[in-house]
Structures are given as structure tokens and as C-alpha cells.
Image (cartoon, rainbow, N blue to C red; front, side, top):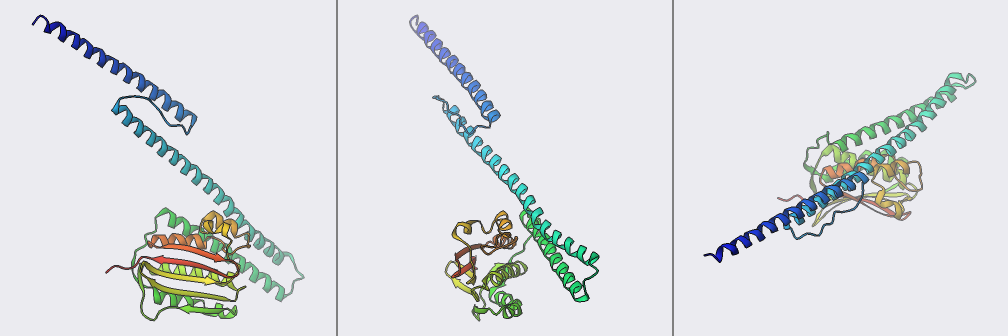
Amino acid sequence: MHVVWPSLCILLGILTFVQWKIRIDQSRHLRYLQTKLTDILDQESSEKVHLHTDSTQLQRLLIVINRLLDANRKVEADYTRKENAIRKMVSNMSHDLKTPLTVVLGLTETLAHDLTANEEERKRLSLKVHERTLDILNLTNQFFDLARLESGDRPLPLSKINLSEACRNGILFYYELIESQGLEVDVAIPEEPICAYGNTEAIGRVLQNLLSNAIRYGKDGGRIGITLRQEADGVYIDVWDQGKGIGERDRLNVFERLYTLEDSRNQTYQGSGLGLTITKRLVELMEGSISLHSIPHVKTVFTVRFPTIRF
């Protein structure tokens, strides 16, 4: 019994020392973590926190801290990107509105002060003012439409839609314009109904945007077309033309609003305004996707895909 007590006392002393050492180490490690985190946040560094420790709890804490740092950097990067995008969009919007407004101002000043203009000339100038005013109104409406779509304030109820009928209506809507442009049209729409979940108004808008784009930029090739097809993995709408097309370098960006705004001033390739950006947002809201394949002056195809309806 006399031998056991000293042994127990020594063991207790060792345990006490170990616990004290662990607490000291943990306290030191926690102070290091606090200092390191403060430095990383103050300096906005991309550095991660590294610590050599045998403590499982501290190792788990380190993993969580580094994940939070990564998430924080991602949020900051997204915020910076969006802030730059907004700044650039406002600049582009100002430019896009300024150009037609300047033209309208010049035309109205001519109408007001040029007393030598005859009735025919004044009528021509008035028509130009009207056309430019419509351009401004259309661009303004596109900005508002895109803002509503991206804010999520505009609900888009989905239901079963007959895409065969929608595609026929879409091409018929532009029949007179196609004829006046002297374009040949290839239409491949099955007689039987091909359906998908969508929104009637949104699908109509998508088809109008794609068909008007094909007509405007496909007239150089003299031929446009629309195809509706049912595949095993979905329903596909192809709208194509044989015009100037879109270069390989630009295809990944053509649906982005800032790219299309800038590209609207450079008609080297087709695409202008916010039409394609709005089209992509609408398709995505209907749980679909849109892609592009283009060989300039050979064939440019915009393909919209909707999931197959499961019964």
C-alpha cells in the first residue's frame, strides 16, 4: 500500500503535466490562428492557414477555417466581378443610348431650322426620327426585360406546350419579312405534336429573337431554316442561317450581355443588343439549354434543347 500511493501520485503528476502542456499548446495554437487569420483578412491575402498539431480537434478546425477562407474569397471575387460588370454595363448602356439620341437630336434640329427643306425631305427626316426613336424604345425595353429576368421578380409558369405549333407560328410571323428579303426557307417541323414543358409567351419570344437574328444576319447567305426534332435525350429546335456567322473566339461569349452590347457596335459577326442574352435567360428559366455552332458563311445554328416529357 505504501508503494502504490507514491506511484499513483507520480502518475497523477504526469497526467496533470500532460493536461497542462496540452492546454498551453492549444492556447499557443489558438493565439497563432487568431493572429494569422487577422493578418490574412487585413492583407486580403490568398494564403491558407497551416499548423502542425497532433490535436484532431485543431486539425478539424483548420479544415473548416480554410474552407471559410476559400468561400470568402469566392464571394469577394464574385462581388468584384459583378461590380465591374455593372460599371461596364452602365457605360455600354450610355453609349448605346447616346448614339441614337444624338442622331434624333440632329434630325430634329434640321427639321426645326432648315427652312429650305421641301415637304418630301421633311417627311424623310421625320421617318428617320421615328425609326431611331423605336430603336431607343426597343433597347430600353430590352434592358428592363433583362433586369426583370435576372432579378427573379418575374415568375414563369410552365405547362405542356405544343412546340410543333409554336415553331409554325414563329416562322409564319416572319413570312412577309422573309419574302421581302428574298430569302429561301427550309422548314422541318413534324405534323404530329412534339411537346415539352415551357411557357407559351417565353417560347414565342425565344423563337422571335432567333428567327429575327437569322433573317437579319443570314441574308448574305440567302437561306435560313428551322428544324424541330425529337431525340432520345430531349426535344431540339434548330434555327440556322448561312450568313456571316460568329467566329470561334467569340462563341463562348455571345450569350453574355456585356459581350453582346459591345458586339452590337462591331458587326464583324452577327449578334446585337441583348436579344441573345434574353433568349438564354428565358430558355434556362424553362429548364432548357441553348448552344451555338457556327462556320462563318457556311452555316450558323442556334440549338435550343428542352427535356423530354416523362409520362
